[in-house]
Image 1 (cartoon, rainbow, N blue to C red):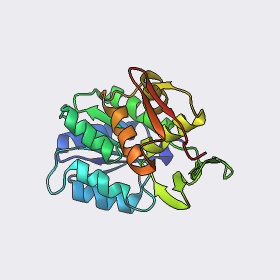
Image 2 (image 1 turned 180 degrees about the horizontal axis):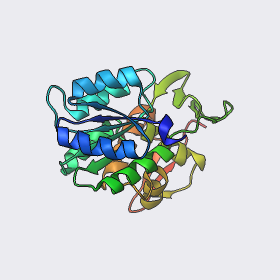
Image 3 (image 1 turned 45 degrees about the vertical axis):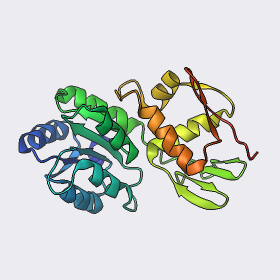
Image 4 (image 1 turned 180 degrees about the vertical axis):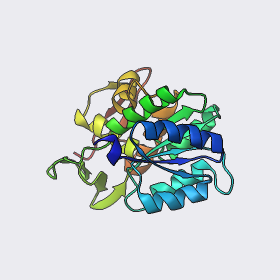
Length: 231
């Protein structure tokens, strides 16, 4: 997809930040929409269905964490890319962001060219629209539907945020294989994305809550593997 076909929504309460980022994104050919609060961001996300949302954390009316959580519940926006742009570096805020479905976490001090490079990397990792409808993997009582981007457990549909789905797809691609933390980070987040060390642990914990504790095994000091106890 070309830049002119991609809509990016910027949500930040600092006008200077919106102006600078908007200018640079428009110069790259992207369509840009802006909002100055979390509440306005949710409304504009609902209206424009952007391909990517760049979301500040600390904002009036509704912070970015809550806004992201609401956006993920909107029909058609479950797989929209959401990246947090923030001055906050505390580990807990990164964990909170990933728990509500964020795809990346970017510091406000990033230079415009570097920011655009990060956003391009995120856009390249979107689900392909050409995914075959036959791409359904059955593992015991669980079905992974790569076209619908959800899983089914005992016939019940379970929706997963993008990164949780990609992590599960990776682990189940070779059942029993141990994927190292470095391999998971590279395959799911890419080398252009810098995230905190607890990111993988957060996503694994959330997955276990949804699919059961016994399917994903921790290999201490190495990484994780998938074992289907129902097969």
